[in-house]
Structure formats: C-alpha cells, structure tokens
Length: 602
Image 1 (cartoon, rainbow, N blue to C red):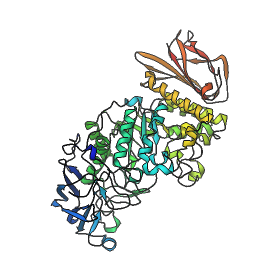
Image 2: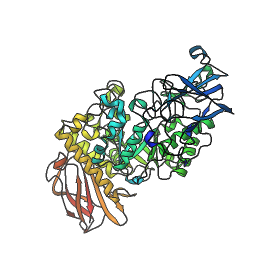
Image 3: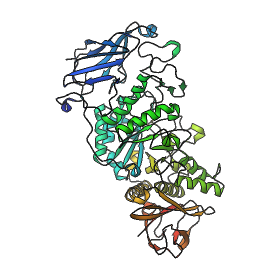
Image 4: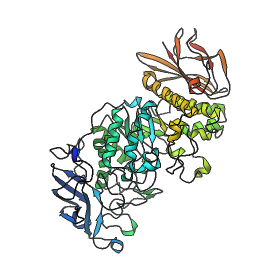
C-alpha cells in the first residue's frame, strides 16, 4: 500500500468505496475510492506527458503510479491508505515552467480534498460518506451570523480553528441565530478567504478536513444551518497552485485554468468557456453540499462571472438539491440575479449604506422624504420578494473589515457602534439596538457580522487586535450583556413569529418629520404584528402617539419586543404594554426615542 495513515479516516472506513453521488459529473477529476482499498485517480492535463501519481512512503521514499492518457485526461488506480500524501508528477509538451522548475513538474491535485499548505503534497481523504441527515430551517426562517473562522477564534488557536470554533457553536445558538454564513473555507492564499488556491480542499492552516466535517455536523446537531461561501469567479493572486498547472502558460496567460480570461483586482478569472473548468466549478458546489453538508451556498462577486454560467450552475444545483439555498453577491444589486439567474437571494448592501445616510444625515439622508423612502425600501426591498434580500444594516465583513490599519476609505470601515460614538455612548448603543431589531422585522433574510452582537469597536481584521473579542463577549461587560440579550430576544421573536416570515407586508404609518415608520406583517392563520421604528430624539409618553395598526379596530395588541426595554439598556415603562386599537384601527402608545417596537394582535 502507498503511504501511511495521517490522522483522518481510519475509524470512518467502511466496507465499500465512495458514496453514490447525487450529482454525477462525468468528467469530474480527483481521487475516488472504488473499494475499501483501491482508489482511482483522474486529472486534466492536456499538455502533460508521462503523468503519474507519486505517493510518499513512511520511510520518505516515493512510490509511483503511472497514469494512462484518455484524451486530455489521465487515469489510473492502485491500493491506497487514507491520509497518505500524494502529488501529480509530469512532463509537459509545452513547458513554460522549465526555467523555474525543470523538465519534471510536481503539482498538487486540483481536486484534492486536503493539502499540505506549504508544499505540493495533497492528502488522500478516506472513502466519502454522506453527512448525517437533519432538518434545516426553511428559507424564510433563516437568521444568519457571519463569521471568518480564522479570526473568530483567538490567535493562538487559529491553527485549530475548526475544532476550537466547534466548541463555541452553542454561543451562536444561544443568541437565537439558526444559520452560520461562513466566509470561505476552501484553501486560500490571502487573509480573508477570497483568494482560492484550491476549490475542493479545506483551508489547512485552520485544521484538517475531518475537523471541518465535525464542525458542520456539530452545528447541525444544535440547530444551526451552515452556508458555505464559494469564490468561483477568479483564482488566487497569491500562491496560485493552478497557475500553469500542466506547464502551458504562454504570454503569462495562466495556463489551462485561466487562459483567455481577464484579470480582476483579486486574481485572474477562470477560463469559464472551457467545459473542464465548468465541471471544476460544479465539483466545488457538489463537494460543499454532498461531502461537507452545506445547507446553502453563497456565490461571491457573481458580476465577474458569465450570466449563462450562473444559470447553468443554479439550474443544476436546484435539480439535485432543491432544499439548499443559493445566495449571490452582485454589484450593483439586481433582482434579475433571482428572477433570471436562478438564485434565491442576494446580498443587499443598500440596507447598510442607506442606514448610514439616515444616521449621518448625508447623501439624501438629511431630506426627510428621501430618508423615509430609504427606510421603506429596507422594509420591502423593491423587486426582491420575501426572502430575496440578505440584509445586514449594521454591516457585513465588507463594511466592517479594514486591511490597512483603519485607513480604508478614509476610516469608513468600522463596526456600527463605533460609527455612532462608541460602546460607552448611550445613544450609540440605543441606535444599534433599534437598527438590529428593525432589520429582524423587515422582509428579506437578516444577517449579522461577528462582533456586532457584543458592541465590538473599531474595525475587524485578522490581526491580534481586531479579531473577535472573546474577553468582551464573555467578560461580563454590562453593555455587551444587554446587547446580547437584545439580539437573542429579537432573533427568537423573528423565528417564532410566522407573520415576520411571510410575504404579506403593509406600510401603515409614515411620519417623516419625526422619523417614525410603522408596518404590519400578516400570515394566514396566525396573529399579525405591527412593527414600529423610531429613529429620532422625540419621545411620547402616556399613550400619546397614534399609529395605524393595519389590523382593524377593537384588536388587542401585546408588546412583544421593545429595543428600549430596561433589560436591553433602556428604561422601565419606556413603551406601552397591552393596548386596544380604536374604531379607525389606530393604537395609541408611548414611543421611546431611538427604538423598535413589535406589537402582536390577539
């Protein structure tokens, strides 16, 4: 047998080869177990010559499996042991790498599931088994928490980020989230994850493939869906292991995976026109779902991909995995990515930028009429349907992350609480609570970036001083604890209230002078809710403000949520409790400054 056991797979070995694929991709490459002991190998190397798989033996020697050419592919099989290290070795009929590497090229397997980060060795995975079955949240009930695994963990635990984070998943569940939006976990060459080196391999500096599998399985066991972030639009600009892969690379074209495509600021686009590259992208989607157990996929920067390719990918994914949610990032935001390209939802950046305009009274936010229009478009994002907009009003990694010591866009990349005055500022805390709860009342899918829930300050990055602050999260800070209680209560209300999940939404009250907006949400056979957001300094006590409930007359309304409740950092009696709508359908209530209120009819 080739090589030895390297940590993964022995207890998991079954009496057969890989599981049967739901989505069979005929030209899919990489290793495939055909029995408990025999593994087949296939690679795409049109310019390759004398191609072989080399295995590292326990004594340091290398054993060779010569592959047979089948058109532009090379195939072979032999006895193997899970966990052994292997690589592809070849000559080349067009060797643009000769000056730097010589006549014999040593390469990683582009379809390996795990690699040694610092070398050309790949690590052979054990026979593939399906993830444990579980019931994921329905699409309209998803409430997401976005994390960068490598910086969600303490710096001294980054080498085992999957394992460390797995033990902290209950923290996310306790906050009322039911889904994790992972930033990329496929092996990358940069720092945030958006420079993919290998599309099928897990990021080795954070731990093993087995650790990532256990992370997803543990998340599922406590009710958390996991959404993978795929970067299919370009290859890595750093440590690109696919560059000139089989030696071919005239005029710095990048070789078989990139030739004929243009550069982006993050790396060269994949050669989308090639069927072999298309199948490589398909494999990335299939592996994420069938092998890792992803409950959905987020496609990064799809405006850098051909529209026809997006349609092809979403059609195939929906055919094979109709229960998996597909999310796109496209700039500028366009409902056509849902209505025509086939995604279920789209990252909706305007929610964040418009909220900043309102708070800073700039770029239209200073005009009451335009400000109210922005607010209404967050309630019902135009053209995006019920779940089509992934809303992160308080910012995603794009708006909070800063790679240049706080200087990106003249210091605009910050946690929301910092933009408004900092954690020690009462108004800033109240305003963050109001926006968080408001987002949970709107149509679309709410998403929160890690650290927002603890009122973390300044900006996010992967360095020692700007990663997730666990001392703050678990240190008993009174303001942080109050914010966490607010987050948990709002999230749990969102998920438990059918009216907040359905499509029926009605704007019932607009007061642009005082920046008060009310809207009703309804669900057949379930109580309706009236949501009220107040983004101003005014205050009404003794039931002194009338709001059209949108639910009719003589209805009893019970206060289900108040972002200015005392337990969240507000004060006792800040909002009315039970009220009855009058003959016109209005409810007369007390409204605190900078607040979001949710009343449920009964």
